[in-house]
Length: 115
Length: 115
Image (cartoon, rainbow over all chains, first blue to last red; front, top):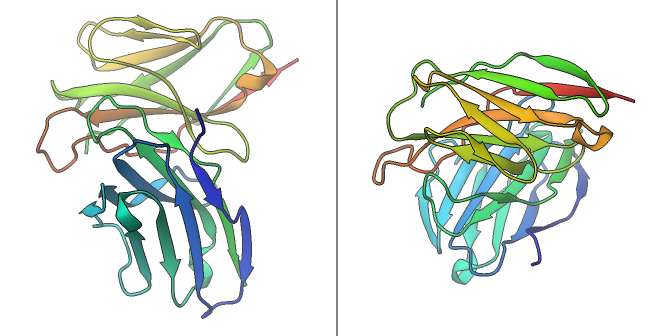
């Protein structure tokens, strides 16, 4: 089965520019997650979707970050404007459902460098 | 969210067993114990999970203490490919709770495998 796809794999921008990341989850997975992983730390959940609805965005900096999940399948995460501290790897994950034991499958991530 | 404590780093030799400890003294009755690992430049991947009983799969074994306040991930024969950051995570299986199904990553244990 195909895994979680993300693009681009790498992105370098200057501060105050905008950037967007794309994620295509595993087919049939209703739950989609975006994580931010700063160098040397574990991933931190930014937002969780159930189909095309937001379940949890409590950790999303809403003044500059936005995310949507079109038709309950693909998702985009946008940063506008970017700050230096947004330099990180952005990981997308999906699972069949948000239960306590359903496996989350992660994509390879997008490494963002903000100069 | 319930917290886990892991050693920052561990080392092993190739083809030897590795025991990765995790303490979770505040675990609740509905928390599953999950282990994920993250290889260099990749997204995290699922390793194993359990609730009360010891679990085995093709990747590893999970030994859970009788009081569930600690657990140990066992790699029976470490290979160079097992060098990664290993995360022990408590995942709430109680439907409807605010932390339902979430993975909250800590710092993890960096495992180095020597040839």
